[in-house]
Image (cartoon, rainbow, N blue to C red; front, side):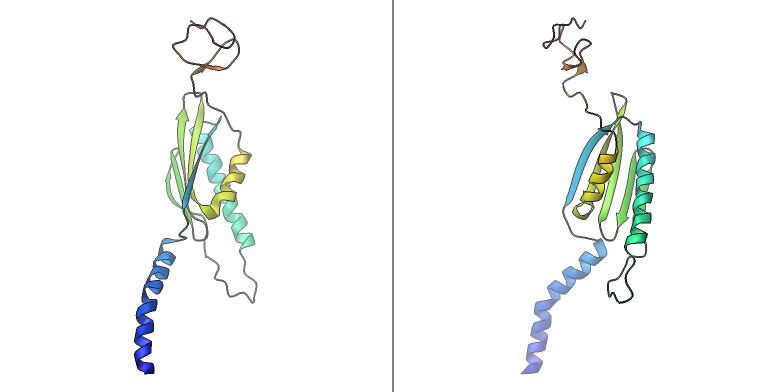
Length: 168
């Protein structure tokens, strides 16, 4: 009787074991998030800032993830490894605990940089702290700023609808 139950249990548990093995190979299975912000830095300056910040993350992780002598938790050997770097456009890194994070840099018309970050949920706090440390620039969505009041005005306008300043 017992010999019949063991193969039955193995058949029931096999799908769970297979999923667990796949998750470990691919990293954390959390949903991805993305964020975009504009900064006054040029793309190469923003790229260097991200590189420095990732190096800070790496050194902080070495200091904070040391296990105690009695811990059974396995500590990853290396965190925040760079998987792709195309200066000054793309910087992608991988972490066994927080998943993959990628930074994409695009130069904007207003002499700044748009930074798009794709990251996994465990890295949210880290990305938000980095964003808060940068000077954020608000882009003009509607058009160029008015010379009189500074509000965004569409390029087809002859006068500013806010202050009446002649534009052309």
